[in-house]
Length: 114
Image (cartoon, rainbow, N blue to C red; front, side, top):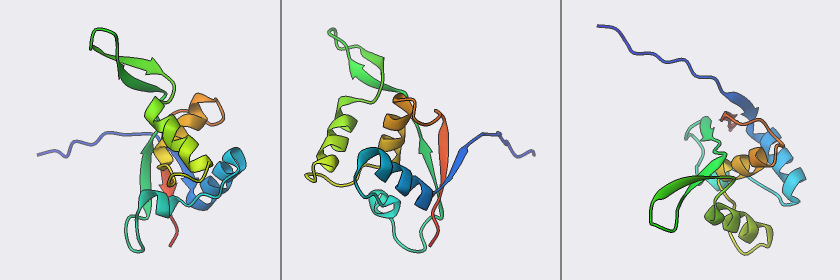
């Protein structure tokens, strides 16, 4: 029997560097651990899938893919920026940053140092 292995490429980033970059772009403090609602001794690595499209319903009720970050994610970002909401997940912020061409698209491997 063979083990099915697939190679995958990730953009690797340190959580502290990501936090600083997010703070510089959104002018808000950000903490990856609290955004992920994770605790000490949990995963030391987190994979964030960056999406450059979102799904929505068209006028006929059919699911379609539209470019950019979805309205729900944008609402979460806006609520966080005004202090009315919690921190969005790294996936949401990375997708927003990628859609604005501030970072490369792709999957991100976030190294969380305890």
